[in-house]
Each structure stands twice: as C-alpha cells, then as structure tokens.
Length: 385
View (tube, one colour):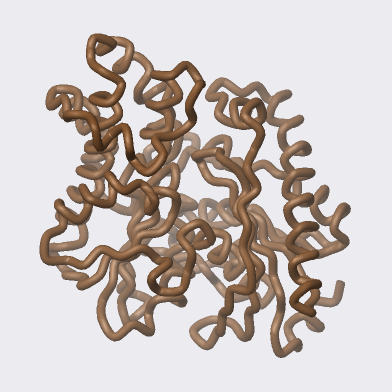
C-alpha cells in the first residue's frame, strides 16, 4: 500500500484495538482522524467490547507462560483481533464509511523496562500479520519497542493521546486511567511539561483478589459491591502498600511482573483466610485507591494543582473505588471520561488509533519525559495488507 495515499486523504477511518492487563477482552474503537500532531481532529464513530471466553482469559493470565504457549497464543489472539476488526468493519459499513487501517496495541505478556531490569525487554502478542491477512487492511502494531530502544520504559504510551484529547479544556487536568495498571497524565498547555507515570496496580489487583478468593468462580467485584460491604484490614493494607514499586520516582511503569495476582496477592491472601471475602476485597480496593492518591500527592501536587481528575478504564465503573478516590482528593472534582464525550471503555483503543495515525505520518508520539527515552521517536511497526 502506498502510504502517501492515506496521508493525502482528508480523513482516515481507523480501528484501534486494545487488550489490557486485566485480560477481560478486546476493546475496539472506530475513529475518524484528520491531520497529525497538534492539529489533529478526532471523532469517535463507534466502539465495542469483545469479551474473552473464561478459559482463554486464564491462559492469557498465566504468569508462567512457556515460549511455546506464547507462540500459540500470539496467533490465536491475532485471530480474535481480526474477528473484532471484521465486526467493526461492519459497523463502519453501516455508517457509510470504510476502514483504512488498523492500530493494534496487542496484549502484553512480558514488560521489563529499564533501568529497573538489567536486561530490559517487552513483548506484546496478537500477530499483526494474521490481522492483516484476515482483514485485508494495513496494521500498525508493536508500539512499545521503539521507545525502549531509545532508552525509555515503553510506557505509559497514552499521554500523547491524552494531551491531544484534553488539552483544549480551559484548565489543567489530570487524566487517570484505571485498567489492570493505573496511570496518570497531567495535561499541560505545553507538550514538554506533560507529567505521566504508572501509579501501580489497578483492576489487576482487585480482579486478581476476587479470582483467587473464589477459585475462579468470579472474575471481578462488579460495581465494587463486595468492597462496599467490607472493612479495611489495616495491617494487610499496610503490607500491600509496602511494595518497593511505590517508592520509585517517575519515569516508571508497572506490569504484572510486579502486580500480577500470583506474585502480589496469592501468599498474602492465603495467610489471611480467617478474614471475610468482603473485608479482603475492601482492603485491596482501598490499597489501590490509596496508592493512586499517594502518587498524586507526591508527584503531581508539588508542581501542579489540577482542577479535574478525569477517570477512564474499567476502574471508572467501580463505585467503591471512585468513592475512595473522591474522598482522598478533596477539593478536586473527579469525573469519568464519559462526561467529556469519551467512553471510559474506549479511551485506550482511541489512543492507539491516534498512535497508529502518527506512525503512518512519521510523527513522533512518545513523551520522553514520561517514559525516560533519550529523545522523541516514531512508534509502531507497519504490516502491509
């Protein structure tokens, strides 16, 4: 495909794909994009969630995955991504438009960022060649590796999109995404002043606790209902917040290597089986909220005082978690991104649609001060149709 043709189009229609560390399914967004860089214009056309079957989710969550298992899952996930794209192409057809290309984050099975890992690396699966073959569309994928090659941590990557989406508000805002991992972006008028980092665990810890305590019978604490009924176990909360990650300063990024249920929670929960399910889930939820608030107070408040915190990701639907955040951030209005026209479940998929667009234009889209990269780089790899 001649990329110059795509660049010359007045607008491009992109399907952005995201499979997060919570491993609950694929988020897909059909996005209309015009332009590049600070002049970009973005419109969400449609978005859908494609849940994983329970057995497939268990395989993705396996923290001891062999190379053979990762190899097989890479192609299997590519097929599932392709199925999601084909469904979104039908949505596009209903809107009278055609999908021009696909931007896929993939699914992270290992993320070992520098400088905290002597031998850094990152791996996202969901084979782009399979997606391209099944859909007949160009695919942009593997966004993290170039930033890491430039000395960065390969995360967080959505601050660039946050800046484009929210910078036009007439005030300073902090965008908080609570997926498997939670991360902040402070949107400032000047791109060079952006602050962004992973705060630590998000849904990964809460979902992991529910899954371990119910032996897989439940996958999540819907609406934070169980946590709302429980009482916080202070010594357990103190233990959860003693993880060495919380003492690190940005640039920093986290993953399941630090906060996967097996490494972060299994033994701790087993040692506290005398406590109720509700109390244990309440404690993990409170620890997640406290880690976010602590990070805000330590790394954002000293220099910035955002008037809004705009929450996206699945955590935005956890009513108990949102209540705890509002309590921990007095004087600051806490909204969901839905209230600004960006569905919480579509935010990351939209972000990768934007990053894919910038790849095709050759526009750098990392935020060096957030990732620690030595310079700005163009992200992503291109697989032709």
